[in-house]
Length: 102
Image (cartoon, rainbow, N blue to C red; front, side, top):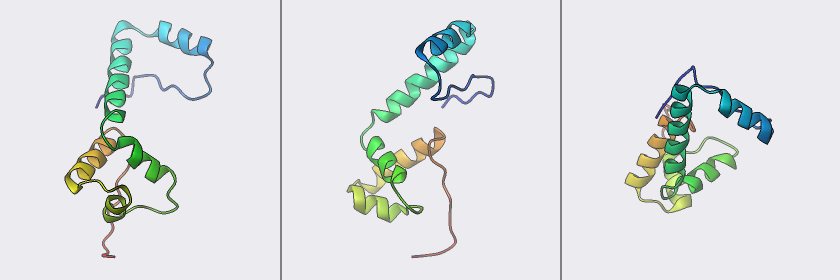
């Protein structure tokens, strides 16, 4: 994934006009990086189970264990592991490892 500290961060509070102005202010290099990042994220969101996984985390009251996600979503372990790693690499999830066994 593209992760560049020099890329502008866009928040929810922008109007359409402000977003257009921001886009117009980007250098060709910055625009290419932003467009690449958007393309990567949209590609990830389009992969099987990605939105379902994000939804589980969005509505969870506590941290989720791998086995809980696997049971709740009915996803094959290898697919779930791959998606979780991709979401972590994209910066959409963080992984916390605990030294305890349920």
